Length: 178
Ligand code: PRP
Ligand code: MG
Image 1: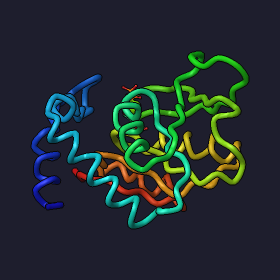
Image 2: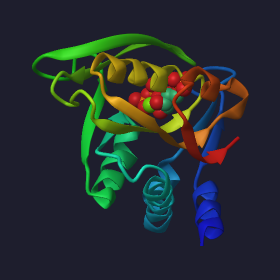
Image 3: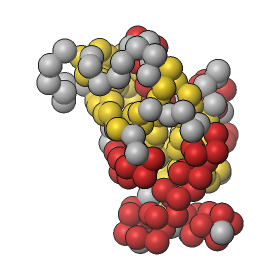
């Protein structure tokens, strides 16, 4: 059931205080990846939500690096493709980029120009929402590409930082909230 799957996912997230810097509570998803049942539960829960809410989705777009762990698995389940948003300087050919601020630092996100087409219905996926800076940057990239962002999916949402507000009007779906 959904409840058991959510319990399994929650049990397999490990908090590390003061990483990578003081005051940051790092949510480690490594135990999920180590446990095939927990990983299957994550993908099952995302799949249920997407089939119910976004049956029209045409492409999953995942964020470097931990969005890559869940995105392709979900895309394959849904029978759609997967595209990469990477940190700057990693992608060959023509790219589009945006800069953004993180909970702990600054970065630049990039996508290949031909990864998404105008009007394509996309869902963004990452492991975690903190300030929302990363997913917001991804939404900005999608806007530049004129893609139609249906929403964002994350395993973990850190409620206190109110990233969901930053993402508006794009809706967020999270499996676990802290
Ligand atoms: C972490 C996490 C999210 C982002 C969330 O990634 O995986 O992508 O921070 O923070 P935000 O909502 O405040 O933007 P990070 O940039 O640390 O790198 P990684 O995924 O490459 O490990
Ligand atoms: Mg990340």
